[in-house]
Image (tube, rainbow, N blue to C red; front, side, top):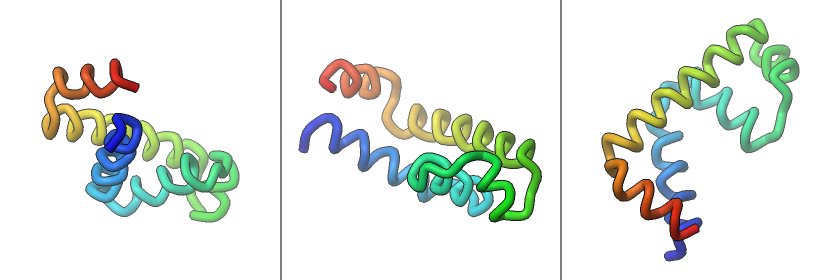
Length: 81
């Protein structure tokens, strides 16, 4: 498995760990390439709520990935890409 493939697997695994509200927003914004405005409209929430959920998801994923892999492994993967 290439470093890029490994990173994709890691990211996918940690997206799946997110609570539903945050996971839906992440998938719509980053994988469906929808704007914050469109996601807010689809989910019937404010743009502020979408932004908050994205920030919360990023923070949760960062903590989870660091806890799971450790900084050394992350740095190694990034250097290999």
